[in-house]
Length: 109
Image 1 (cartoon, rainbow, N blue to C red):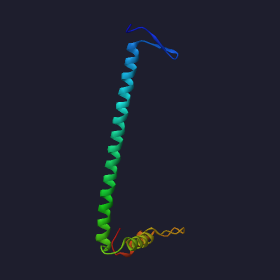
Image 2: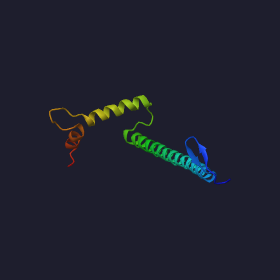
Image 3: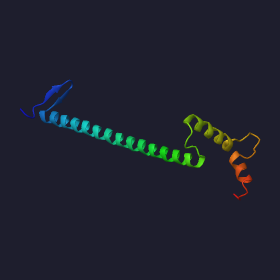
Image 4: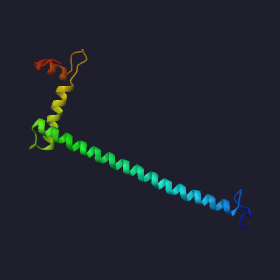
């Protein structure tokens, strides 16, 4: 009775084989949940790292750009201006903005 084959669609399985298959399916479902849990923890860790980095970089920007009391829109304008100065490069092969600043600073590279 326990190991007598039964037809399931086109496959004949014994009771033990069916139980074993069900057990495997349950283990697979459990492992899938564990996998998702690991993925979720990693995403949360990455979000926390990014948040921390944004806070640190923002604090440094405020400190060195002396913009503690300005609105975000004004701060963005200031950053765009600085970015434009430092990243300007023309197609004639002239030095980039940051290179010009270093040359004019009086300090050797």
